[in-house]
Image: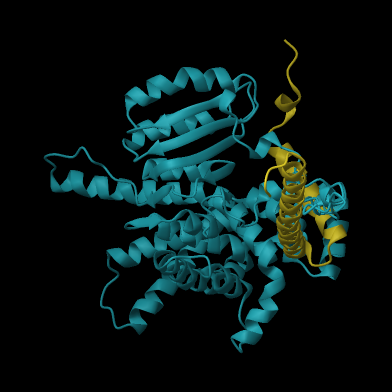
Length: 77
Length: 397
């Protein structure tokens, strides 16, 4: 049976992957791993704030839609 | 967007359940499955909910999981504490190549114990005591290997804060290890703080011992066993001086254990056993362990003649070894007396790589992020796709 891709990976390969990834991170971020995670954390915060804002927009949107539907059905809005 | 990497995630389809007390029966249950999984070399996940048990049975399972066979490669092990991970089960958790704890997992370390002793003679008791001591040291050394890389990850992500710590504590000479400890204390419970404080105290001792002894031993030009002998002689001399300074009138058992413990730690990192760990860490975290001009020099050495490995090791060891000593000291403390840990303690002390449902940085996230220069969470792009609100209607009409 053909072995899946992972079978070629041993601990040494994983160590090399990690070293290569950290090198990339260091090239992209002067502050290294610390700056990478800080940026990630900030992005996550921004994402959460934006999502909350979206939810507000969607909620208002739905309320508006419900009001329109109710009024067209002759239901008291 | 995180791209799942199976080297850092549990796989239910290739997992064993390490549940209940560790006994021969558990070994019999798990062995066929482990052997079958080992054929394919892909990672094996070990889910843990156990309070430990027989150390010998634990050793059998450990060997089955991680010892390299004549044909097979050593499989990558992912351990996951879902409930209890105590005693031998805690050791198994930490030995994983990637270790994860669920947020309510209960982790507890202590030294190796024999629970089946009944009637013993004093000779046998003394034999057991020596054996326990040696088992503890062996286990601490084995666990330090896995734990050192985890602690190095914290070192790398927190290094940027060390200068601020020095300013805040008004101590420019504070070592990197002390700065790291200060940063990690924020995550630790009072029990975790007790462990790390004790480890720092021990690290300072081994650090000064290494600085004093290793150059003397190297100056003797001895190699192999004779070099080891020189190191041991210098450690004994150091201990004798210490005891005399404290007005002790004999070299008691504590002193002998201290000599042995110091020697074995120096032996592991200076004379062999963990040399690979020094290389791996030095290479992986060269940006954190070395200054820019040192990296240029190191890269030249690495690209050069492979026969110069000793020179490369010497260069790396100077920066990395103090850190390795520190990780080893943490493990020595963890395997003495009783040490219950919260999952956050376990994360900060390098017992696990990740605590689920926490926002703390993990190696998995660093490895799975799509592109390191574009952190991976979408900045709510769907905001743009929301249709505009419907035009206002005069609902009062």
